[in-house]
Image (cartoon, rainbow, N blue to C red; front, side):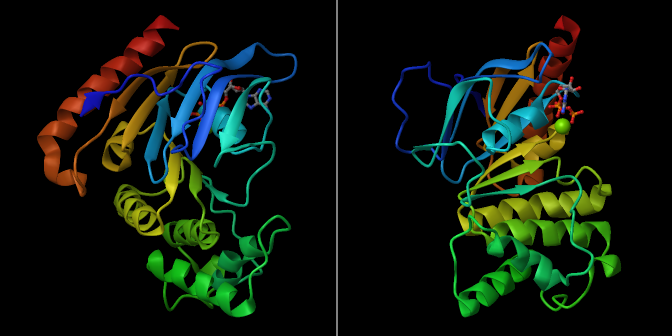
Length: 269
Ligand SMILES: Nc1ncnc2c1ncn2[C@@H]1O[C@H](COP(=O)(O)OP(=O)(O)OP(=O)(O)O)[C@@H](O)[C@H]1O
Ligand SMILES: [Mg+2]
């Protein structure tokens, strides 16, 4: 592991061609409120898993929504796949803490649902069915296609939510604490599954979490957000091979370092 130099280039610097997403000098304020975050620059490379860590209320979810095009920044620019981002892209997908499945649709219906959105490129029926089948298999739910959400455990529902996102074959997956409502064992399973499937699917990921262990287990790079307004205060490159649990000593040392930085941030605000 090594501490990376902050990845954000200064405004005016050309966007590197090898970035999936590049944000420059982002500022965001809710109406009538002081800025939630300011001067945030962040680049995500293709296939890179970036975890955004930070204390509660520091603006992680707001930043994720802005980077996903769900909310416009107050200032700053975002480029996604080389083009300015002004609305959510069909080449990205989102997963949240709650699976938010439609109760009247089956597992397959829920997974296929996102493929029919207006901005999603039209695909033929056979390709549609194949994508749904592959995504369900990737999350380990083959055979459960006809089940309804009411008959699924929380972990299974979150697998369906992940499959729904994967079926869109996103270049970038945004995930906001997707596993925080799950029990420890299911969460660990989902963390491994996430790494496995995004490697298979060649997607980049921006994962918001306040779980240091989760960040260390899945991330290629950990970005720590803190301060008021929120800024990126530190980054770590995590070079350990997967599965990470085999590297307990290195994980322990990094965990202590990140925890100290997080506590230092909170003490300073
Ligand atoms: N719709 C809103 N209108 C006004 N203020 C908001 C809104 N949503 C969030 N905030 C405020 O913006 C700040 C950042 O919130 P945000 O949800 O982005 O934090 P977070 O880092 O994701 O927190 P957590 O870890 O608890 O999920 C908080 O002070 C919050 O109260
Ligand atoms: Mg949040």
